[in-house]
Image (cartoon, rainbow, N blue to C red; front, side, top):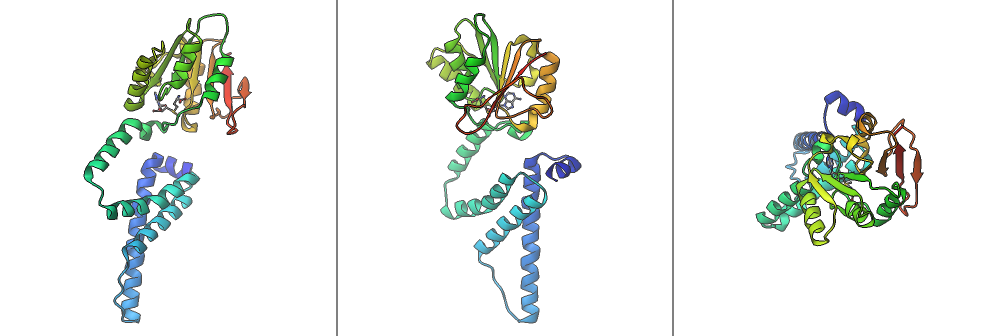
Length: 265
Ligand SMILES: C[S@@+](CC[C@H](N)C(=O)[O-])C[C@H]1O[C@@H](n2cnc3c(N)ncnc32)[C@H](O)[C@@H]1O
């Protein structure tokens, strides 16, 4: 239903989430006003609501509306927690600078997540080793991690394959900056670009590694299929491409997540 609602209203999930919180505020106002009015008329009471009751109602209504609108299940917890965290922080009298720094760090880290729907979360060394084991041997290759985050995968591959050109491209400024600084400190040969992988020509690469999100996999396949050379490899950790069976699937991850590989025909 979320897809229907989002498609119908042409909204990103984050926009829908803001709308849901607004509708929840309106509902809390209507419900509390109706109870206040009824109790005044029928029982001659002058009700006052403790602020936490209102916060809790807001959280419950928002989580309920999130469920009704078909948002993914984790959004319910976000909707439930958000008003409570805002209330808790407001009574802690935290200095404004804290919020400013938090805002700047979050913005730099999740720069375009709203648009791309791909948040930052790093892969682990077990995946880098799997990627290494799947690379074409005995010849230099050109590999890129599209959405390279802090750069670990590219640096790991660059270390193991010094004859090859290993790159990363990252759209969020903070992870990109961290990856560049780390590559300098570690004297890594990996090259990190700041930008959007959509602007790349995939024909230039022998291997493309992606750890993105289900929201972009269909478009990623269309671009890869159109641009990548026959015989080159597209790898995706955790996320499949609906309707496109992979050439191989590796599953040595202790979390049960897979590494999917497509050999371009
Ligand atoms: C799940 S993280 C993966 C990080 C890294 N590949 C790893 O394995 O640790 C996905 C990253 O892709 C970046 N990203 C999302 N859309 C992008 C785009 N269109 N172009 C470049 N980077 C993008 C995000 O900012 C995020 O840092």
